Image 1 (cartoon, rainbow, N blue to C red):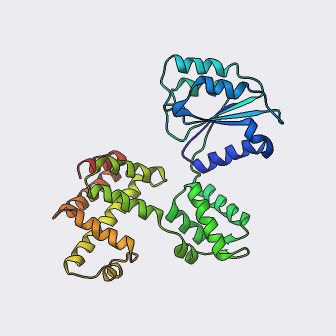
Image 2: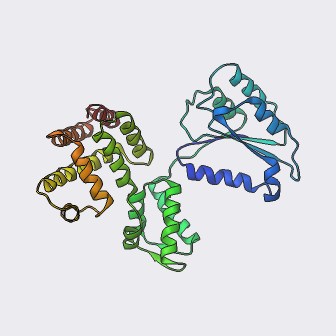
Image 3: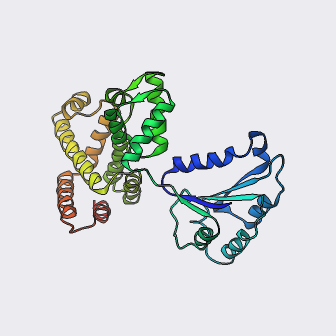
Amino acid sequence: MIAIYYGPDEYMRSMAIKSLLATIPDAAQQLNVARLEGKRFKLEQLMNACEAFPFLHDRRLVIVDDLLKHQKAGKDREDLKSYLDRIPGWADVLFNENEEFDKRNAIFNHVSKIGQVQEFLHPKETELIRWIGEQARARQVVIDNAATARLIALVGNNGRTLINELDKLANYVRPGGQINEAVVQLMVVDDTEQNLFSFIDEMALRRNGPALAKLRKLVMDGQAPQYIIFMVARHVRILLQVRELELQRMRANDIATKVGLRPGFLTDKAIQQARGFGPNELERLHERLLALDHKSKTGAVDVLAGLDLLVMEA
């Protein structure tokens, strides 16, 4: 077998790799499984790993992580392409790609012809709801529809994060228990809110590069650009309120109550962020967000491109 696993759903990719590893007995894995780093890839490493005879098993598995983005075109790539046509029959080679790469890559196209290529996408909402229910039952608990919807709203569609949160929720209600919306609200931290705070932090510090990276993280986590506009505009309105209340010398806990923030870290962070913007800057940012929202809904501008420009000009 020669295969490429790629795509944004890291959790499902890791589960697929775990299934491959499970075909080799635990006692034989150390002798029959090799893992190579694509950033420092040498063809000799792959050849040595593939051509060693299996021991206490009939197959060897070689996993190469993150090769396709980093390997340059030229002789090394052509040599690898040639070798893939003659690897020993007992060797399985898997290219596991965590990073985006150009699909015109010669290795990608070659493996598509001689092996298998599997893309792991984040599941659609209906599939995600069913999957969460299955995972809850596997943990001997039940999660109702409202709780499932709230969990997705707070965490997004990242499989690994959802599993971590489900483990925490299942431990809280114990086997045989039920996870309802109140339990989710109590136990699950709003990951989107934290990522949004981080994004606004970078904008307030005028760190355009990191801000763009945080914006991309929000998109990769499954948040639609239109929703990001809504959330950023909402957060800017909160910062406007926070700044006004701080000017009135109101205490942080009272600001949290008045604005509807969680007391503690998030409120302190909002106060710090509001201080990072100069006079009238928050108002101008809010106006630009409203204009971008209107233009995106009328098709006058690409939403993500508009957000990029907003960050660069903030």
